[in-house]
Image 1: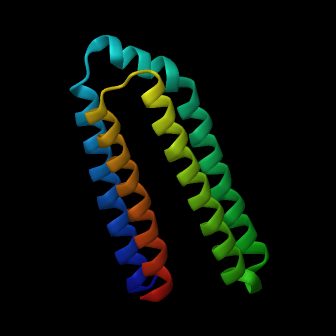
Image 2: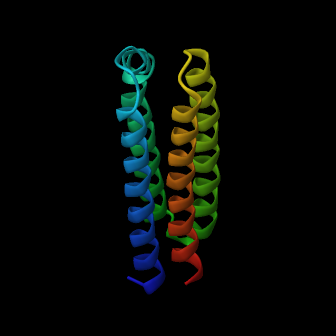
Length: 131
């Protein structure tokens, strides 16, 4: 394991944890009725998003294990697809939060949380390739 990979994983973990703390704090500040509307809107979708993310990661690991000669091409394709998926989810989440009337502070906190998560993911990928 290279130093870049180790640094990338630590950075991702820190960004991920910070992202979760910001999201949890924003949720705590919500009124109960708004919290319930958000849960009703997003509750079932979170399971689907987790399934899609895990499926994409499994496909990536299977692909690089069978086609290791195309590691760089597969990695770039995976990174591109995963970032597109994350960005689309970010915009859909933003639109849905605004449509159910979530407070602006909460929407901003969630967007910052997503940005930290994506930033940590990018740092992990770039560090593993460049360092």
